Image (cartoon, rainbow, N blue to C red; front, side, top):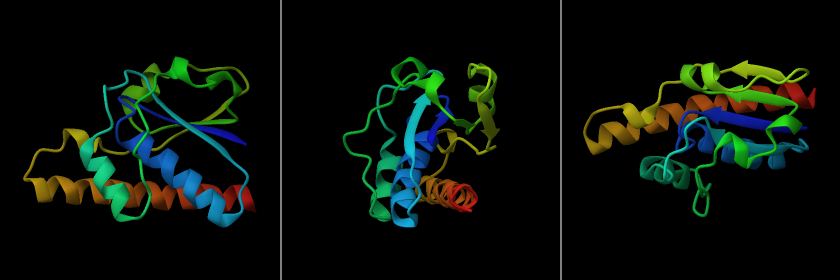
Length: 140
C-alpha cells in the first residue's frame, strides 16, 4: 500500500508522520510505501522536528521538504492531510481515499525553546498514536 502524508510546508508534521509510519510499519510487519509532501514546501526541515524525532531514535537527517509534484501522488492508495490548509489545497484524484488528521502546526507555536520543544513532542506523540491506529487497521 502507498500512503502520502500532506501538510502545508512538509517541514514538521508530515515529515514526522512519514518517518514514524515507515519505522512502525517495519516493526509491525505492515508492507507500506510511505511518502510526504507539502502544498507549499518550506526550504528545510524544522530544527525542532529534527530534535524531537532524534529523541525517539528516528532520524530526519537527509530528508528535505518536497512538493506534491515531487512524489507519485496519483499512485497513492491513501492520502492523509495533517492540516486544514493542506486539505483545502490538496488535489483530489478519483478513486483515491483520503483522511484528514486535524493537527496544530507546531512550527507556528510561540514560546520559550523548552515550551516549543514540548509542543513538538505533543504533536509527535499524537501523530504516533494515529499512525499506530492506522497500521493496526491495515494489519487486521
